[in-house]
Amino acid sequence: MNMATNELIEQAMALPLADRVAIAEALWQSIDEGLPASTEQDAIEQAFRRDAELTSGQVESRTHEEVMKAARRALGCD
Image (cartoon, rainbow, N blue to C red):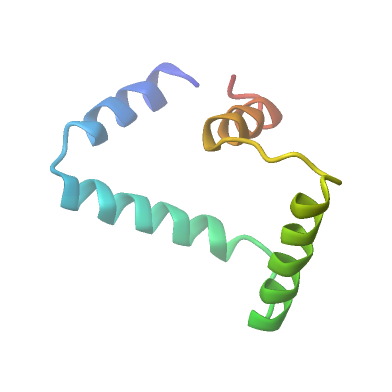
């Protein structure tokens, strides 16, 4: 992350919880809008498929921290 991003994050983290939630929701919505549209049925089918993969041991689960670290690395932010 660059200096401006770090400063913005630091300022946002100093805000009251309600303001941080509002910012997080707005950011998430902006990310969601940039993704291809899928139907609710597609999401349900994907959730069942992923559950089956985890249950069978076909894939291993990762913590939120591991997923975020991989995402930052993929975006060149790490």
